Length: 252
Length: 181
Image (cartoon, rainbow over all chains, first blue to last red; front, side, top):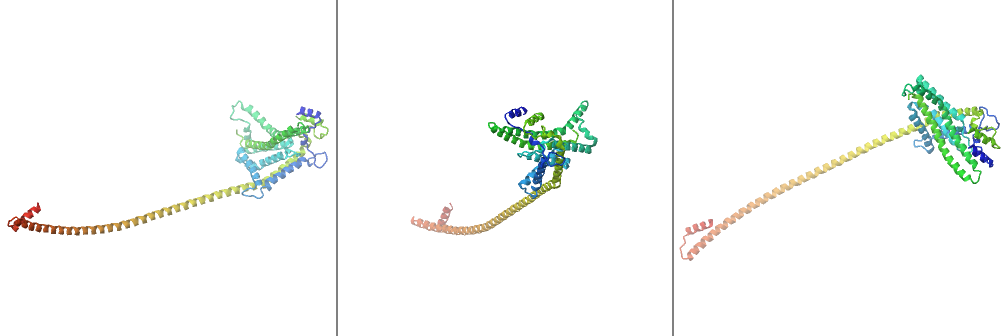
């Protein structure tokens, strides 16, 4: 990517593939304080409104035979409910609203980010790291509250030969603490990379000869990004369920 | 990747000065993002857990209930239909049996009448036959008598014509002997 950018710039092209991720205050000023209203605020608010529109406005008729919008809300409900039940087990159902919150936020943020000129909140590590840490802390706390010290059995692979167990325990421990890292970087990285690649192709569109190829490439990437937007939300959610299962049933 | 984009953006003439490389790694605005994220998550959580999810759960439960009820009602109606069919079949079978009984009765009655008529006719016929036989026997007896008389007379005449004197008793005995033979 670097060499492409340099080569293109010498030809008079300007690339700002990462500018779309800049956090800006909405109402002037350069300083970003804790409560400054920024484009992050705007797009998170839009996500909230979208979720309210889908999950509350869509279901307000409470019809036995659902309307289209109600079907979508029910589909989302059923999808996550079944995932929690199947992956994390029946006793994880009380975490369903929490997991639903994560899924709805990520899926809305991802899809809103696909609107041209929008801002993708899930492309920021600040956001995904917090999401992943919330999951990590929840899982760890639930694990210890539910199982006490027995939760450490998660790291003690009792089916392995005794001599191997300490080594496996170290590996398991490392993998446990790497979880939030991979969990957060997977989401932000996927979303960010796709958006940046689209921008790079868009930059090439300035050259008349290349622009048809560029437009086709953007279209293809956009299709891929639609897929990624959903799949990453799905992956994040299902991993949360898997981790939650570890917390509730730590034995291997 | 971070360094490459740093170069790319720093080369750009009007690059936003606030973005050194990846804006994601500009930790100065992390606090802001995290604050808004937590607010967002809390709002979504309450919206979902207080309003949306219970409502959808209620709708789904109600639908399940409706479906179950409808299925039960359908089962009931089906049972009723089967019952009605059975009743119908039974009525049909009864009607058939009744019809058969009536047919059998009628047949028996007709047979009885027929038998009686036949018996009567037979009796009449046999009576008539007996009468006729008697008449025939009488006629036959009469005829035999006549034949004997004729034979006697003829025999006497024949004997007389032959010039003999016919003894009445002899002729009669001879005729009788002939007629028996």
